[in-house]
Length: 102
Image (cartoon, rainbow, N blue to C red; front, side, top):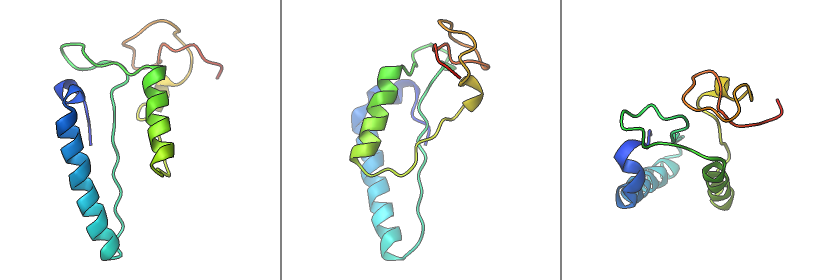
């Protein structure tokens, strides 16, 4: 599920998605069938209006939520950006702009 653009600020819609997913998850568990969901959140802004940005604080919120709710996996969508190669910049497909030790 790709949550981006205007949907980022529409928490009621995100809540409905999550409730629907819970219904499917419960059904799948009752049928002993596997069920997995992947959410992607924006990192570097590829939305035309440039309204998307994921910060380290956002990543911490996602991590904290995952820990509190029993998620067993968190992953990065664009791993090629995780290299510390362009600290302070934004908008590149080859680096995150975040200072880091690689």
